[in-house]
Length: 331
Length: 255
Image 1 (spheres, rainbow over the protein chains, first blue to last red):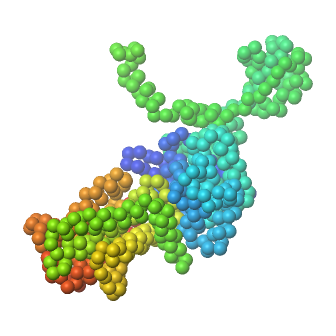
Image 2 (tube, rainbow over the protein chains, first blue to last red):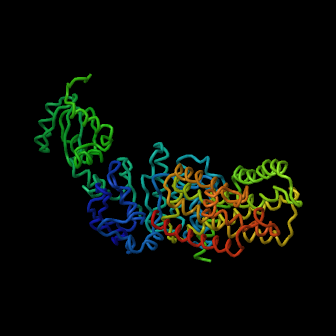
């Protein structure tokens, strides 16, 4: 992987009347990377994608893709990118092939090349057998795969995926991820995606955590998790008190007793285990390592978990605040 | 070919959709046929033919205009439809000019409307009206102009209106009155003063009059054409250019 940024964003802002949807964000994405935008609904993820793919103009700041300015050279940017939107944008009346053909012709691919590319893409996403079927009866996962294939027909350099697995079951989500990885290898493409699924963000090379229109952290998934805290090693021994003392002496780690065992906080838990078992004189009954999750990362940077951020709960809190606890009418 | 490729595929998509949706073909054709059979024949029984000229013959030009009007409006509604179902985004992020999208929709809408007008024309012999090959050709030529004009109007409205419900409301408030005050069902000259003024403002009046010039060439007003052929052509052509330009501008601005 070389380090030429394919996407370069500097001080980008987008203002919708009173709301600042995107607030002076800067980042760059290297060629060949899978770059993820992680944040709750309404954080500014889709707005950023819409600016990058030329559907919206920025209030201020710069955005460049493959060296072309998103607001000044929209057509050149458009031919360099492929898009999969949050909602389905397929024509349900057409067959899978017709949908892709429409796309290929829209991007001015010569007919013979279009045919070859369409077949190749349908093959990658495993829909060759359904080529001439109307997509009306396709499942959600099949439609998504078809859309990903469509976004790649014109050989873009960057593929944008806006919540690519929204509303799909876990099995289908894994399948989609397999395709994205295959495609990345076969097509040598950069992937820019948004998600609010933590586990999904793990697939990215780098993640930007976005909240209220600002990037609050940007690193590899491993790097982000390292910022939070170390791993937790949970260990049950024949004599926990004894073990705690020995660990303190040998490794300098102060453990705490928890659920009839010990919990040790350390940077590299998996490397500690063999040394731990070797060093302890008491018998070790069980051991396990808990790695910090991206949920923990999000919690640390925003002070709340990503799921908490739904408007209903917010109104609940406001209402309580207005009435005050135990006010008349409270049950 | 290269820059026309997107226009070509946008048209092709509309044709595929049209021919796949059997009820749509049936619906747009059933309406004028019903009017001709039921209203045309029914009224013919009330209104005695004068010099061998029946009411059915009188409303025939209007029926062709009606076929075109409903078909063109339905075609331009596909813009609202595409926006509602997200497909418009697929076109908007493509490296093509907004002009290609509007032209693709306008051309496909025109072709489909002319096609339906031709089918209605082919039914004439069964209704006991004779049309020469030359008249037939002229009607087709006029249909192209009228279809383009009304499709452009539809696209202009579709580009300005956000929701499908809004489009339906506007269309219901526009299409029926435009048809009724067009001289298609009864001569404009026999309308009350106020309604007559309205029909002079109605673009469809001139479209119907254009067809009357071809099909009712030898009749005099009130049955025959009211304006000069040149005037009809001028109005329809000017309106086509103006609405098309506005549609492109509205589309560029709103999307």
